[in-house]
Amino acid sequence: MIIKQIFNNNIVSSLDDKGRELLILGRGIGFNNHVGDEIQESQVEKVFHLQDEAIYEKFKATLMNTPIEILQVTDDIVSLARMQLGKNISDGIYISLSDHIHFAIKRMKEGMIIRNPLSWEVQHFYNAEYDVAKESITLLRERLGIDFPKEEISNIALHFVNAEINDSMNDVAHLMQLLQEILSIIKYHFQVDLDEDSVNYFRFITHLKYFGQRVITHTSHDDTEEYLYDIVRKNYPQTFACIEKIESFIMKNYGYRMTHSEQLYLTLHLERLMKRK
Image (cartoon, helix red, strand yellow):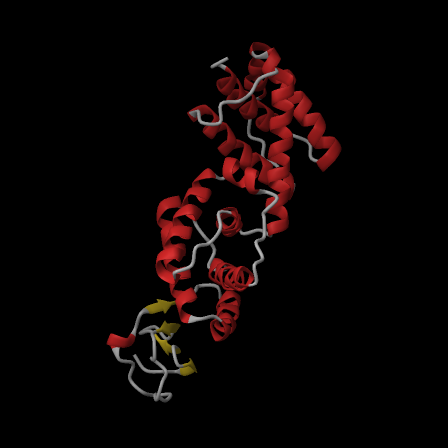
């Protein structure tokens, strides 16, 4: 590979065999080198090729101000998240997460710990992301020699969530608030405490998150045959009564009208969740 541009002592760019720009990280890889020089493979530690051009340009700006150690561990964390979560994670996380880690370290040195007000919601609604974030904290300690406080677990998990749904942190907060409101309606209607460790609860929350995203984005979907809707409404009157409360609440507070398809499948998921009672 040939050096196309030198950003600093540790970061250069090159082109692959298809003419696409690559960002090459390696300690001292840009020191005493010039544009047009051959890159020594022994110096290459990380290679970045981001698909989104707008994100790529922002990432190049991030590289200029972020220590190489943080960039390297960010890449490892993103790889860990993609492998364990099995979800499509936006390349934008390289920018947001490396910035977060960089400034979190600065805050810690100043004795500042930022507590996430959504910590409970993140842990309960996005437990897979939370578990990966816990592993990320361990990785940060091993790689950077810094003990990040447990408050950072939820902060890092939120970056995974945000990158998954490719939306703003504000919408993620709205989504978790909506989930909490729906769960409160269910608990009040059935007068029960839900078993948050059960498989049915996990399935229900997974379905509820997809439904909640449609509410937040006002994207409806309806492909239900009416006779199925009528059968479910007739056979599960108590559960359907709870769904009607949810529908009324969402219409009043979010201006979203649930389709018969959404009422049908939410009833079925909720009925399965309640069967253990």
